Amino acid sequence: MPLRSDPPPKGAHVRRHHRTTPRIRRSPRLHRLLGTLLLVAAAGVFTAGSAPAAAAAPVPLDQVIPAPAQVTPGGAPYRITAGTAIRVDPDPEARRVAEYLAGILRPSTGYRLPVTAQGSSGIRLRLADGGYGAEGYRLDSEAGRVTLTAATPAGLFHGVQTLRQLLPAAVEKDTVQPGPWTVAGGTITDHPRYGYRGAMLDVARHFLTVDQVKRYIDQLALYKINTLHLHLSDDQGWRIAVDSWPRLATYGGSTQVGGGPGGFYTKDDYREIVRHAASRFLQVVPEIDMPGHTNAALASYAELNCDGVAPPLYTGTSVGFSSLCVPKDVTYDFVDDVLREIAALTPGPYLHIGGDEAHSTSHADYVAFMNRVQPLVAKYGKTVIGWHQLTGATPVPGALAQYWGLDSTKAAEKEQVAQAARNGTGLILSPADRIYLDMKYDKNTRLGLSWAGYVEVKRSYDWDPGTYLPGAPASAVRGVEAPMWTETLQKSADLEFMAFPRLPGAAELGWSPATTHDWDTYKARLAAQAPRWDALGIAYYRSPQVPWPTAG
Ligand code: TNX
Image 1: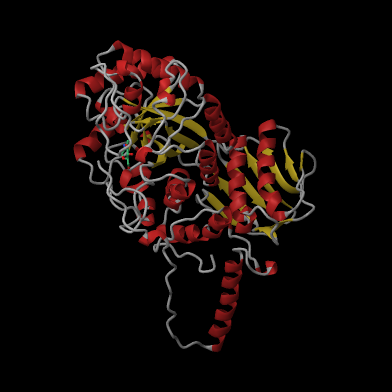
Image 2 (image 1 turned 45 degrees about the horizontal axis):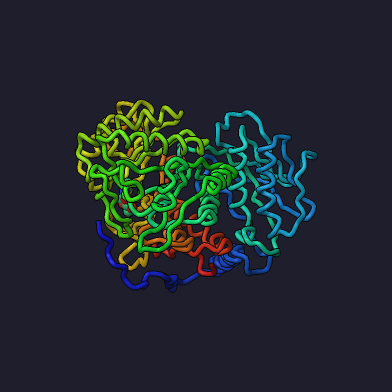
């Protein structure tokens, strides 16, 4: 799949569109009403941070992304003041969540916001059983206090993300802002639809630094995504140090698409990513893509090739030309060593073994390879995830298949995946023509690919994971993941332009009950996120499908 050359950056800055107001005859009463409405609307716009503080109206409780399961607005609002304290139960992880919240609030409010176990007013984080589940929470906002209650620190953390979004966008800034810091009154009771809510970064095509990955993790956390899948190896680069096969990283990681210097993570770098992800309640799923997409490994060790000859490093963007040598025993020594070392770096349950686009591996070899490699994942105590081609072999019990087909994928291929799902293989849904974040929005998008078509924001949002794959039981769907392939993407601004505004939609598909799904209300909530992205320094794509605030 060769890359198309990028068109000129026409779509790079999509301008706000102008609305024309129809001239209508108004009665005096209607006139007054319209005047009031205008004031209210203006107050809403001013929430973006530029206007008199007193005009700001609190964010309505139902403006959050992902949409909460249940929202009951009402009662007096809560206001954070210079005297506010953050009260937290005496649990070390809950305390870390409280400190994280304080870390967001202190720079913009300028308040001290001490974290303490004492007292019952202010912002309270409480651990309690109450049917919240592993990640759910309840938020109660009233005159003297706002209380987050959850069964787990993860639930409190997700509640903190909701609280963050209920505060004015200026709360995201790192300098003191005027406020006021008001949270609308009422109650939210919330929990996720799916346990697996992922985003993938391809650090193989273009290497991304630890800091770039951490920045993306922080953005994922804002939308309650709980899984970061790292695509650590491909034809163009091997990005993780493996002590038993050191040339994988030092040589196989020495370049990238376009021939730049590439790079790799030392084990300490990788632990730092895992640690940072865990602090945001994300698990990391490492992927070593096999048996195809392996040119960087084959180039690093001649003995991995069937003919014993190492190919050169590769800096182009074609796929499907490389394969590990399935009949050779050394292949499995290699895979065993790599999986052992990566499993040891992975606190989470999953190892992703790739398995896509193995066009240079015969079907018989592919099946033989997967039959030998899947038990190695189990040997190191982990659960297999593979791209959905794995269902053409025999997924081991407990394995998950990651579906990346399109609406136009042949019925027989869909049925193969659906049948595996009926036989117990869990599904992660990443339909390429919906949530591949590297697809162009339209023909003018200056970054990205278009092999799966153009994917505008509405198309990306408007599908239901529960009924998406014909013949697959809804109970097989473990969640949703939005992959970001990086053939054309090199820096954080590139990732952010492609992820925003589509990523919040993927997050909502993974978290929110199907009953909340509605494009018209979603697009208004999405538009309201724009001032927050501005405050966070995220340069998003101003899709013409979304009614962005004109003051943003
Ligand atoms: C398909 S999706 C691939 C990747 C490419 C991507 C580009 C998948 C499992 N394989 O190798 O990077 O398309 O969009």
